[in-house]
Structure formats: C-alpha cells, structure tokens
Amino acid sequence: MYNFIFDIDDTVYDQIVPFRQAFERNFARYTHLPLDELYRQNRRFSDAIFEQQQRGEISLEDMHVYRITEAFRVMGIEIPREEALAFQRDYAAAQHEIVLTPDMQEALDYCRVRGLKIGVITNGAGDHQRGKVERLGIYDWMPREAVFVSGEVGFAKPDVRIFRRAEEMLGLDPAHTYYVGDSYANDIVGAAAAGWKSIWIHRRGAQIPEGGVQPDLTLGEGDSIAAAIRELCE
Image 1 (cartoon, helix red, strand yellow):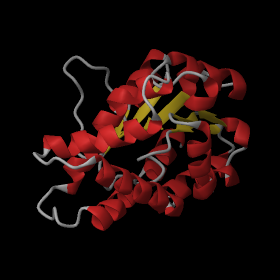
Image 2: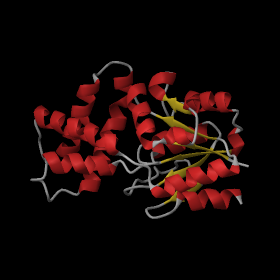
Image 3: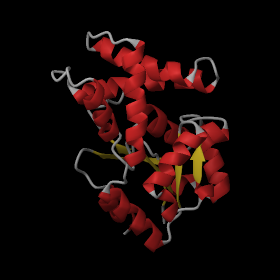
Image 4: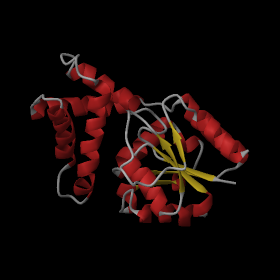
C-alpha cells in the first residue's frame, strides 16, 4: 500500500485562478500578454528568491514586488513598485477564495476510504500556508499534525530534511511514499533525494533539465490525480 503526500500551491488547487483575478483588476490594459507565461515567470522569480526571504535577507514585501516586476520585465514592461504592491494585495485577497479542484477532492476521498496515509509538505510562511490549508478544507481529510510547512519546520523543499520530518512524524516508508507536486525543482528533485517516489503535476510547459531526475509519473493538463492514485493502489 502506498502513502501520498501533497504539495499545496498549483497542486491541490490551481494558483493561476487568483493570479488571473488580481491581474485583471490591476493590469487589464495589458490584454496582449500571455497570462500563463507571466504567471510562470512570477513563480520562477519567486522560487529564485525564496530562500533569501526565508533567511531574512529580503523582506516579504520586497520579495512580492521583485517577483512580479521581474516577470513583467521579461515581457518588456516596467511597472512601478506601487502597482506591484496593489497587485499583491489583490492576489492575497483572491487567495482567500481558493477551492480544491474536484479531482483533488476525489483523490483525498479515495485515500481516506482506503485508509492510506496522507499529508502535506508545503513551502512558505506558517500562517500564510496554514491559512490556505484551512480555506481549502484540507483538515477535513487529515489532522493538523500531518501538514508540514517550511516556515514552521525550519527548512524548505527540496531540502531532504523536511521529507525526513514527515517520515518520522507520520511513520512513512520512503519506498512506498509518493510525493505529489507541480514544482520540478522543489517537489520532484526533493522527493528523489529523499528516496520517495513522485507524481509530477506538469503545468504550463515546465521542462526537465537535461540529465535531471525523472518523476515516476507525470500528469498533464486534464489528467486525473484521483484516477492515477486508484491505478497505483488497485
């Protein structure tokens, strides 16, 4: 029997939905921009500076400004700090309305009925990520103790120590544990380093670097995580 540990952002819900809402409120004049690419760049710059922010070398506000201004710069557009902050306020507000995808609800229901061990490993500040978990209703399927947030644990994916913490607390066998996530660098590389299996939620054209580790299973747009978990367990 397998265990399944999940990422949060862009895995159990589609993070581009609140991003789009904030974009339309603040940058509707840029209708020519490919939103998927702007979002992808925003995530890329966010990941690039995440560890600096966690170490206190840059403020959370400055990180928020940096990631969206740099994403726009890639598109050849300069935006002022004030617009970046207004976008972030609306982005944060929109994240209060996030919901699980129906497919993820089905997957979690299946895991619960089968008695599988499930949990969450997510990067970010404790209060911020816990708030998302609560709004998504994740605690309906698992206890608070099964959710591991990098800002609380003290190390972040892909650091193998956060995977080890989950193993210790949940009694996981690495060889029988799948990590489900969308970030190749954080989720797939981190899971492989920990000796876990992985399911990659492959969104928006991300590519595996040459020579990079391969996920055990890749799901593209429209593929069902619930169906994949059922197939692995039956």
